[in-house]
Length: 410
Image 1 (cartoon, one colour):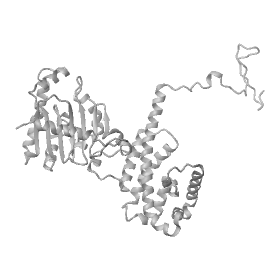
Image 2 (cartoon, helix red, strand yellow):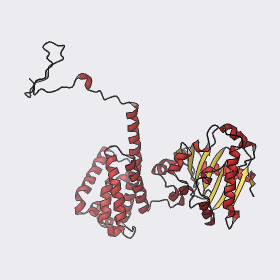
Image 3 (tube, rainbow, N blue to C red):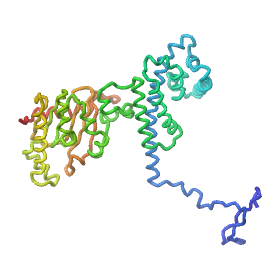
Image 4 (spheres, rainbow, N blue to C red):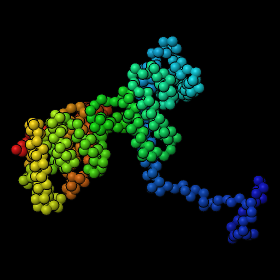
């Protein structure tokens, strides 16, 4: 009989006095082998947790960017109003009676952080740095007449912050974050940062928005902003219309340029060129020996690849013939060994995007890995070394070099 008045179950049948029957009211105890049976994780469990951690880390970066930007906006607008009268207590004064509880809690956390030496950066030694995203939002909403001259629609700001609150809750409690919620958080964060005036303003951002991770650690990876196992996955993420639509300059080099020719209609190319886009296309000469070597590498029938390249060139010639200014749409061929395919959009400016593929011996262009590069002339700087340019400029220079040695197609 246990201390609580409940009878414990008997031992195993093999022991003396053992009976297999369990009397009414007995408490069932876990057998020793049952305890800790789930302690070991298999590979699937570890992969799932790593995926969750990656999503949470990505969401945290977005949330951190939004919070830092919102904190700067609140300080820029409210500080000049309250600081002349209330000095260092201007945040407490701005919170007013309605925010007395949470602002005092922030003051207390700041004091504890001071005492325990958690404040490593003197710039964070202020009450504003200890306010959470909902509290910053409350300050903004509470003083909206002060913010109204700078931001058009209060509802847009609040809706974006509402969407972020779900993600903030999940990340702060280390809960599982689904792909759908992460995508929603990234969209809301990007929209809110644009509303708050933190966008880059570069046209390439509209074509391919700057990712939060790229914004923070992009220099570690030169100017590579995307890596895709093949062209199919690239086109799922970046459709041809998003990549080429609205371009003011388009330079492309490759064997047959299927990424452009087969995925962007001739009608769209005509409209693009008529709107002022300068196009230069470099095809591998279909009559060259390099085409024959490539056919052997891929195991194609004799003449199959050369006919495909000829078809693409003829299609581009038809597009050029429909233009008022054919000189803005140039088609050349080259006779060298093809080393890569590259489409450079607005490669002459600070907002360029490039898609690059190396040619593999046994893989067609659709199956080869793809790099997405962002131009802009941002140098990569490493500690103790001189700055160096990224890959975008390398491929742009290579295009110009081959273009100089190529022949025009009449």
